Image (tube, rainbow, N blue to C red; front, side, top):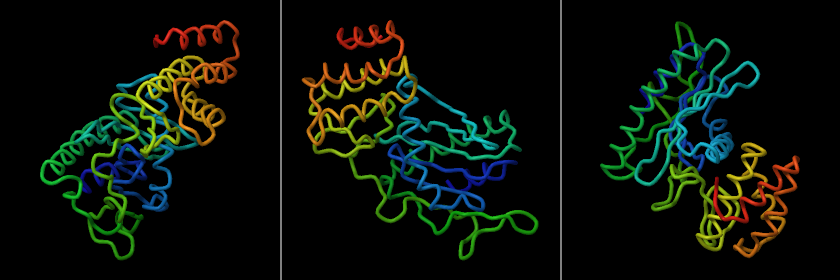
Length: 267
């Protein structure tokens, strides 16, 4: 896995190449300068939450490119392996060749998924090799490893960060994941049963038609206001609909949103 990530890091303009699981936990990482393990772990949750929002409108997404300031973030889905989902993220600067990088990401994603499949087939994620270090800094004649780190090293699952057996990832290929009572997933919202979970998902998708990818955040905030520490149930549905309708500015769109939720069918 480290060889594949290093091949991406060797591309002009690429500053970091990272693999996350569906809950935003770091699986493997190669990075230059400030893009060390600590930083990559810190942003993992935010990246996966953004992807979770994208899935509101595009369940079958494959690649996403976002630009920030002088930089670029490229995301590539690695799909689902043994019930868990994985994501490849590449951070680059303005010197990146986007077209060339897109091809490199596609090739790397294929290789990484094969490695994940092979590891789980042998003995689960614990079968993946672990090694010390992951940061790469510029040095004479090219790149050099950080102090105390061996050639080709990468960080795989920091101690205690292995996903629990049978746990459901937040970023599932089937769409959104909402937490259920007694369970723990990426979302902080607890749904009492599958019907309540389906209602939350439908509300998010309908709201996303009008407010974009912030819809899931609005739903989570509304549920916390309505339920406090209680579990969300379908009985909260009408109140949730009225609460979310306030996020839709256009009266006609607001009426369409309320009608869609009342009908119980997603468009």
